[in-house]
Image (cartoon, rainbow, N blue to C red; front, side, top):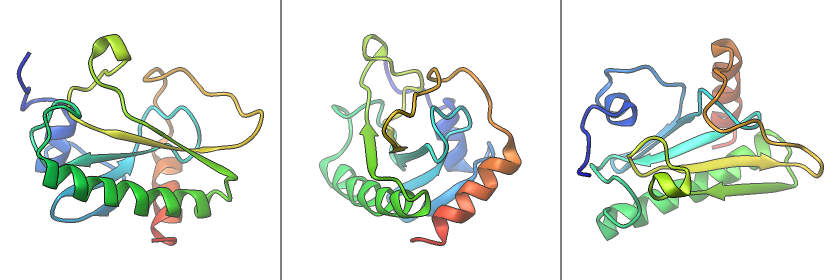
Amino acid sequence: MGYDTENIFAKIIRGEAPAFKVYEDDYSLAFMDVMPQVDGHTLVIPKDNAENLLDVDAEILGATAQTVQKVARAVKEAFAAPGIMIAQLNGSAAGQTVFHLHFHIMPRFAGLEFKMHAREMEDFAKLESYAAKIREHL
């Protein structure tokens, strides 16, 4: 397929689209999912033109994995979650809808059901408050 430099995550990296940022370093960016499956649903992406896990440079993947770990700890603490789910989808057959490598971090509680993936936009004020809450735990 080839990497699409106009995908929404590429635009977020370039500052051409807004995002509720949680964390950023030279290799990666973490921000709130605007169509979350649960409260606190956070995304981590590499600052690299990688469509999926199989395309990314190993050094960038390693740095991005460190960000996933750091942000997952903060999400777990911020939402007092007993568990954290990390999801990463590769290809449309696996459910990937944005073709830029990304990791989903979702706080999990027993009995809490997921909303449908990529269906409903969340209130932006709520997302900003969640981002601030997570940043407090970084």
